[in-house]
Image (tube, rainbow, N blue to C red):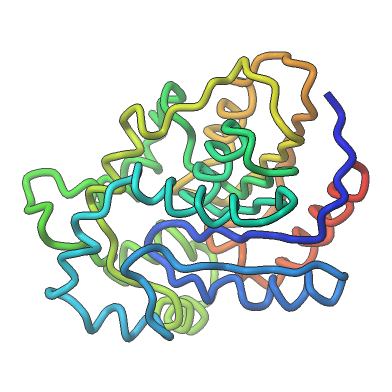
Length: 263
């Protein structure tokens, strides 16, 4: 099912643990290519900087109570406000939300960058479990948010980068997270109908990503049945989970732009 993508509107969807300003350079780049973009914050993450959100702890109980269902519906409402279905581009948990919204028929095309997999694609990789298990908050209060430590950030997001770059990325991006949302990724809130026809969908991965390993993204890709829809997969070399901010990000953006034009 090949669609002709006419829209020039893009909705960027942020993943967990990071501030939505992580899309700023991407927005500028795509806008210079003729697109209109927005990168709306999650509910209860509407602060100018990551430091502002870190300073809300432990009073950020509204964020702690946020569920994945509520988060998905938040973005569903945003994309539904466009007169023409927009292109949806999401990273990590935002990549899962992208897949769900495309599955609901709400986007003209979807790009899931290193996405958290939908329900049914079990993440058994050790590096995923090591990098992500603390976000589930097992044996801790769901009334409190989770803030990734710098040590965990080094492993989960910025592995392989120089120490100063790792520190800079942490200060600029890392924010408290809802453990309830993280747990939602293991429930029917993360469900996708893999056999349903859908708008063009591209899944990308990185060979250095620890929290969402390339092998996991490949299983996500292979879970889709042959519905006649456009479905593509691309693994980039040298990319960790901080792919949006790595020096190579323009190569990824150009690949996505080229893919969109081919549709």
